[in-house]
Image (cartoon, rainbow, N blue to C red; front, side, top):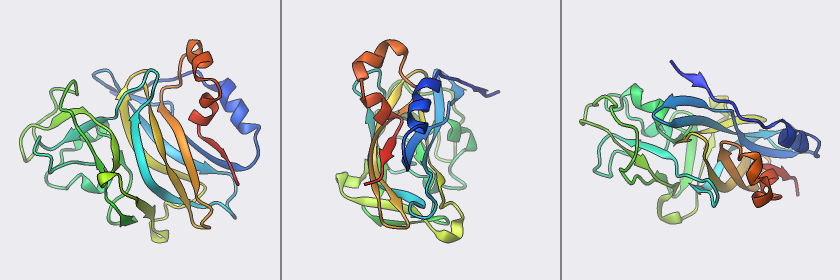
Length: 231
C-alpha cells in the first residue's frame, strides 16, 4: 500500500504566500512508492486567471541539483533505447505495464490532450541502481535506472495542453517525478501561458532540504519553491 511522505515546509510557504501575484512551480509532499523512492506531482500555479492561464512548458530540463540532488528515476520497456517514456503518451498501451507507472518519471502530456512544437521531450537512463523486481511486460523485463530529462539534442521544444483537454488553468499538473526519498532535482524551463507572458523558472523539485542546509542554499531556497514575480 502506498503511503504519504511529509516534509516540513510551513515557514517557506509562508514567505511565498506573502508575495505579490506570480506563478509558483512546486510539488506535492510526495508518495513513497517503495524501494527507497518517492513520487512527486510537479505543478505550476498562477493566482491571476485573467493574465496568466497556464497551458504547458517549453524546453524543460530536470537534472541533479548541486546539493543533495538526484536524477529522476526512469523505467523503460527494455534497454534498447527505443522504448522510453518521457511523457504519459509514451507509455504505450499493450506494451506498458501499469505497475511501472508509480516508479517512472514523465511529463503529463499525451497525444489526446496536448500539442508539441519543436524538439521532442526525451530522457536518459543509466540502467544502474533502479527499482528491481518489476513484472515483465510485452517486451520482457523493464530497464530501470536514473537519468536527466530534457529535449532531444537540447534544442528548443514545447508541449502545451489544448483547450479541449480541460487541463489549462491557474493550477496545472505538469509532471510525475520519482526521486530517491529525501533528495531533490533541479528543473529549468519556461512556463507557457495563453496570454503569452511566459515565465522562465529555475527551481528545485522533490524533498524540501533539511534546515541544516538552509544556510548553504540561501535565497535559492525561495527560488527552489518556484515563486516567480511577473515582469
